[in-house]
Length: 333
Image (tube, rainbow, N blue to C red; front, side, top):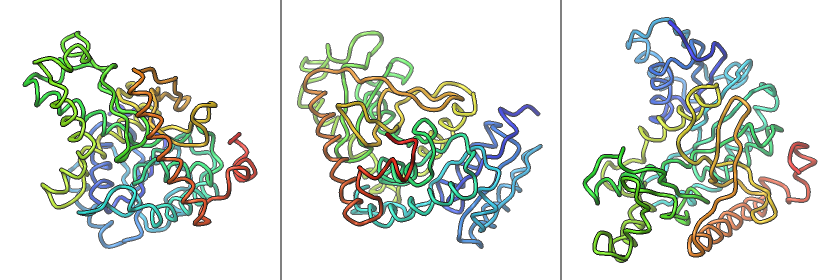
């Protein structure tokens, strides 16, 4: 049985719905035969492992542990969903303090137990901030840490599928940028419907402006809608997309959607946010986002919102002031 790599993949938060789905997806995609599941909740973790054993996957050395040192030692790749889940009535930002503290400890554990890790995908919310905190405390390079932002772009695609009653294959390059939260920037200028720019549809009888604005709201509140319908936050979609991200970092198929990455380019500084990205064995890189003036304004507002969240975490004392970041992590300018 051929695998993408033989190196160790550790899934943090594996007793949860996202983590357990990530483990199953990684095995189904044949990423590596060397998978370790970690969660501090030992009985639930054992239950997940037992059920995965019952799947009968061949050639996989699946281990599990509630010892973070054991879980991270020797890991080349990590995907972490190890934060508190979003509940009904909560925004992603409501999770800030508790999950920021979890991210700080996670970063310290990475630095201590697996400083040679190649890539980490952080997906617990607010992912832009938890990913930034992980990067700072892990001591890793910015190219080695990415965050899940693709859900917003896939939700845009899904809303267009439903509105136009066409298959997803007829829709290309759906993109949202900035924060993975209520202040995301939803772009139309990147998207094409059967080869025709989406901007040619907006404001016409095919997609009146009021319908487009309502569609954007549905995209932004896509996670809330799942909670309203199911009584719990999304787990299948973030699990699948995060494993696609780590597969790309292992040298697999290119990741098709924007990812969250560390940005400091003079326009957007000292922040983790969704950009137009590429994930390869060399890590995550990004290029400048181009859009209409209105889209650029939305992106700037999203950045400003992320800066406020970052500054809240600084005020809490969870991360130091920006001027001290380089001392904490020399890979951060």
